[in-house]
Image 1 (cartoon, one colour):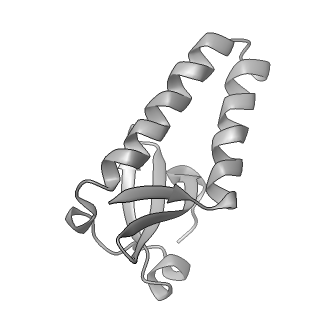
Image 2 (spheres, one colour):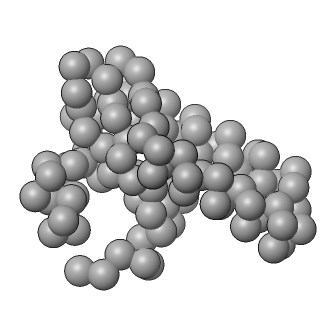
Length: 97
């Protein structure tokens, strides 16, 4: 299986990279962290059934599964035709139940 990012997930990764490189002034760290995020997204595709349905009501209705990276970032995804489609990447603290 392969992992595909929806535009909203790609925008989240771009925002994270911009924040680390421009606000914190650590461009090398931003590149390394984005590589880790993308590697995690790819690793989800190796065992997507290991993750449970999200508890966030909006995502639960859409039957999205959630995976947590670095105890901070929540990846909401769905399996469609042998492809893991990542819809959202959100900071867990920003999700209001």
